[in-house]
Length: 372
Image 1 (cartoon, rainbow, N blue to C red):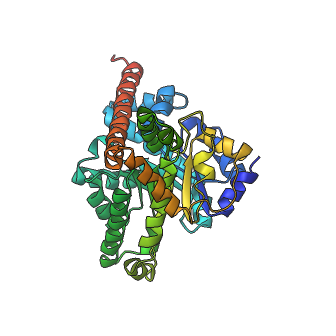
Image 2 (spheres, rainbow, N blue to C red):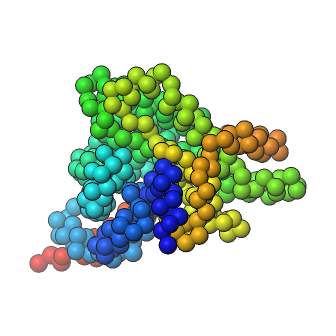
Image 3 (tube, one colour):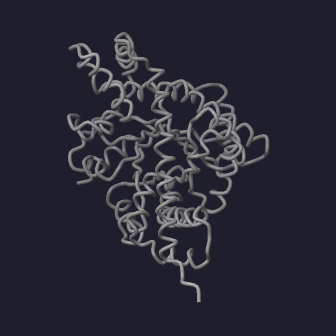
């Protein structure tokens, strides 16, 4: 069942699970996925925690203790989420040790409501790193305009970062620049650059969802022929930008003193349109030194019938440019699409976080001891 997953790993794609819950940790399921399905990392986001904690299983005792202590809902939520991330990090620690820190990572996101506030994002990232207190943690920072200087500041303090919600090629270049600037700050501060790691989470399926909707609006045969192509083209051109930046003289100077490349991570790889093969954003985004973080359904589909045929990214750049150009010629604005997706991404995570705060507050009230 896992031959396709092994082939994917052998091609240089690290397989991370885009999900976490206490039940997954305590049941042994996460350990099983690591052992049998080549999973070498875990990503979380506010929506994942909202689903896990609202489901309730495994959280009642901790919620009862927190209610007894009369902590705020904000503190309770951070105690719960960091406990899950810490436990998952411990399970993945052998992978971290075996890969010299490249994999075996668990990501936890700063409060999404801080996405447009640089100082608050930096402060939250430092707090999360301290709370989890595991070397194999990645702090997720969104790639908003306010997020870019926060990335530099946090990397400069020696904290490893997963940059999330990247949709545009221009913003991705800004993310890589922020990472290099952070490494330069860390170097100036005398930190060991070999201990700092980062991934850049480039979102995939949502690009097709939005552009396909607009192509349907155009309605011509030419437009329909372009459906399902923009997301892959966008991601492939991101890899071209990665190759360019991480072969530059600026990078070489950092690499000489032990710095690690910031790997591209393909996120949002679950197919939204049932007309597309369910392994599309895995099979067609195979390239060395990348990460693909998959929902469990996509992981299982890849194990069952994924078609891993080698590198499907390098050598496609001219075709990718032509496909995005063809979309633009139909009057669909790339800049408008990627800005909309970034705004929606931040808003969706903020909504999930607020929903989670409300449901956690209700549980704390339900479980609070009655006053004598």
